[in-house]
Image 1 (cartoon, rainbow, N blue to C red):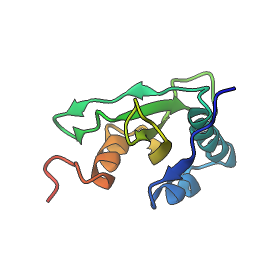
Image 2: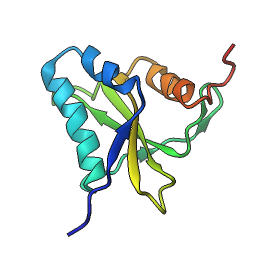
Image 3: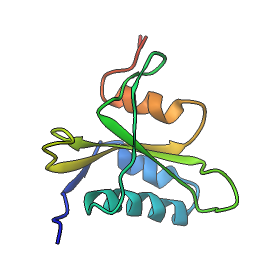
Image 4: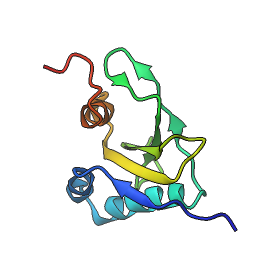
Length: 117
């Protein structure tokens, strides 16, 4: 049996969870990061985006409580210290897909936001 990785989160991640509009979305987001830590889910790799910043060590997961529409929410996480030698899953941010806002917030939290003044 594969060992689960411990989870940690950015200090503002708990507030991200709290402001999701429904309890079901809150539970789904927490379940997604749990699924990552136990190895049953792997997100899609992010890249170094010119408008956002370098998130190439991060991954994203799409989710929603509705199945009849495209997923409206994104969860951004990374494996620490890296994907090859991962010993921990870090949840960075979660929120509604609103242009690139969830990725901008992830880059900001990691100190990588392009053109941050």
